Image (cartoon, rainbow, N blue to C red; front, side, top):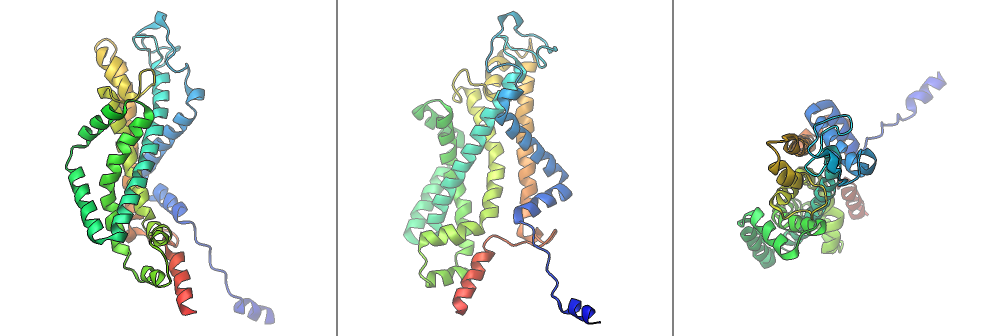
Length: 320
């Protein structure tokens, strides 16, 4: 009997909460099959780019003049182009370029957006008014025109393309970051932290940005596909990667456009790869948006939203 009493008095350990993003991944697989397909496509693109040297049957731009415009066969699964280069190998190496430019440009875009948006929202006043009028004027200019002007000034190349795509996108995206921070900067825990002597930089890095982390992740997920499409568009117009670097856009612009009547596969396969990647990025981003919406957070497990730990620490300080 005593043993039963001891067992009843012993507190039952609560199940440990799963991590926030692990929970999101579990819900994605269970509730969003199309989003899971998008994640699979993005993962395949990432792995293909990383292991391109191992996956490609031929070296980058390896020329075989004895097999020009060859039809698909055992030696060349997707055929060859007008210089005898293996189409499948160029598609695989093109995935690496798309991955590097898409992810890097997206990360740089988020950095620019967070920097401008956070400063504008936290400083406010005349600074915010002037900066936002500049952003409004910038957003009125067509994006492709800005890209072409910047590429004409700084020249061709992968680093130049990343900067040319990221800076304009970051300026326009700062409006979203600014609005999100304005919505939370007047919360009680932020005011309490200010009363405790926190600087603006501390508030931005420790409280404001962590609390809008889901929004930043969503914006980045939706941005990757657009960056890959933008890189292909610039390469198609001749302002993209330099000659000799495999790119889906340049494959469409050069041999794909010139020889599509003789060898339609030269235009089909780069276009198909580009379409699949854009589709995967978009449906994955849409699924994340649905799952990370605050109104949908009660589905699986118990969530600890970003910023809760900071709130608890501040409450403990104020109660002392």
